[in-house]
Length: 381
Image 1 (cartoon, helix red, strand yellow):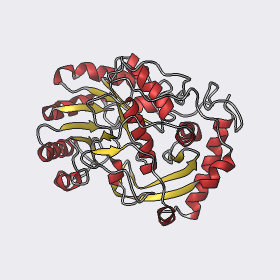
Image 2 (image 1 turned 30 degrees about the vertical axis):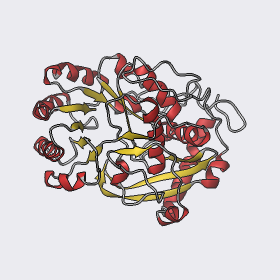
Image 3 (image 1 turned 90 degrees about the vertical axis):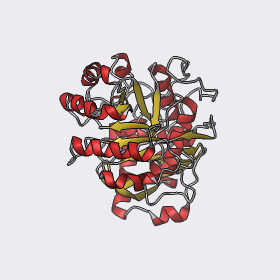
């Protein structure tokens, strides 16, 4: 049972049911007491020590004592938003982040708070100095692609958003073509549909996009069953299928792997409950895993970088260059791509920038109340 300090380990059985993207429940992302070998998951084993248990849940007052709510403006609309709100707070090991998207209910947001506690209250040693990252191309006009890619110096992989509201497959093809022209034939190009295509639409779209030699298509359809069917349909196109939402928003993050519905898994530290829990998912996947961001501040990107360095499959770029999508951040030394990589380090929040990007009193109160409710969900486990 999860208890407030002092108490037992963070995250055990007895999770309160809540809404899930696919099956009506929340992910079981309990941090393990040990991790299985990574040799069968498509990546090299890590030498990083793994905590023997998750941290205890701090008192709510301890979290609120250092919590700062920020509202960071974005360069372009992404995931339907132009401002990214987040809570950053300081634990014994450094700054950490709690930033579930505003539409998530408290049960789903609990994994994100578990991640914040894991990173702020657990010592994680960096397994590398830096990790490669991809450029992220939102659903912009093809003509805007070259200038956008300038924000990602040295990146040789791009993830291109497709299937966006108000766009067509012709728009998507033009955008991917512009990325391929700008980055060259040797670049790795991925597309991400966020599960928005139907099975037939995804089949047609991948037939149109296959000539661009995609590294993979991320979550082209919503359900695991449709992913499995689509993977069979497009087997002759040479387009691997990656699962994202089917991992981070499912009651069983590894169900998609066992169903043979994906070639690659995309994992994100916060939605899966933190570095420790996400490493367990990666180790048990039996598939190559790519670490990506949840549109975090640089504090959260640091969490993802620790995960990527410790456990991501070699030969892939992590989706952790998204700091380039923000026009403001919580640190004077943000995690931005340099020579196609970001550093693996903890990020120190800057008081002046926390003040500059502070959310309104109304939004701050909303987030503090949310933090209290989600803390209660974890404390009741």
